[in-house]
Image 1 (cartoon, helix red, strand yellow):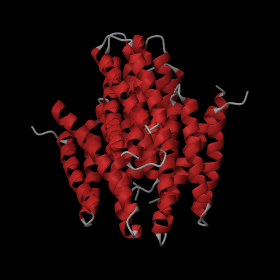
Image 2: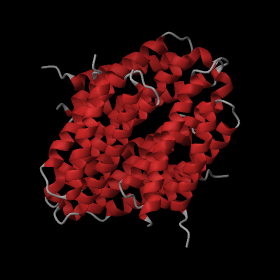
Image 3: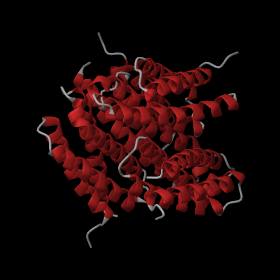
Length: 112
Length: 112
Length: 112
Length: 112
């Protein structure tokens, strides 16, 4: 596998963990966390898969393609939800999720 | 180390992950999640350390005492917060946290 | 989703973490760990995905089907490798992996 | 808490996960993995706590001091073991572990 793509994907996943955890934390501190509950839930889902993926990829897992595919799917969902909100932490998180999903797709289905 | 105490602690940690995750999920679905935000946050903290502890203990970590001590501390905090609320999922979680903290303390500081 | 199937899958995943971690630990202590290196590696892969899956399923993840499918795939691989060896811990692990893979498949593609 | 110290610690933990996972992977591929078994084991321990710590710190855990203290202790142990070996991956891992332990100690016991 393309080692640069792999290293890039690990880095993106780690950044995504941080963006999602920050968004999660900030959503819980918004005036009405009830409004943000889908965002809170998806932030946790996304941080969790990105962590798992970064860990697995960095130890040379033989299942990198399947793992990256799942990770891209969850990043998409989180990114879409975050993009619906106006908070800075949500917008930032949406961007990072999209970028991470792309990096994952390059691992899931490497270009010929 | 006393293997029965260790196996018991692993089992308690795994049950605690489930109780905390269920409480977390249910708190987010309550009418006013904002009221439950400390509970939501501590449920996640507690599920996270209990998972880490169960995993580490089950692979024979040489750091069992220190890990179990940290786990007991976080279970205590989560159990106290959950005990403040009347929801069934909170009361159940408070109980499981207390029981898990005890099991951890037997690993952290085994009786002479 | 069928809640009994879900609870069963969480339980199987948690048992699989324990069986894989025990097998991992025991393989590293065999006279010639070099002979067991694929088993060591897959034990860690399998413990890691089963942990992630149990955690995600127990917090009501909306991605249960995809996660369970990935988990089944990795359990299969680990179970096959373990089945090649005569050590008690490997044979036990092979069995638990197969049973966990089945439980995951019931979540991944629920019977009509 | 000093936010720069916190961000630095998260970054160090994430780098340490990668160094430990790489060392783990490489040790298993050495000619005689049996010689490296303490290193393999500690690499996994260290990757696991650093992951947990980075995740917890990045979601604003209220238990940062205790978590960072445990993380520093395990980084020390892994760094010492790695420093005994001549492989490039071990030497690199030893360095990263030491640097991560320092960053954790600044969180565990912030200077007055």
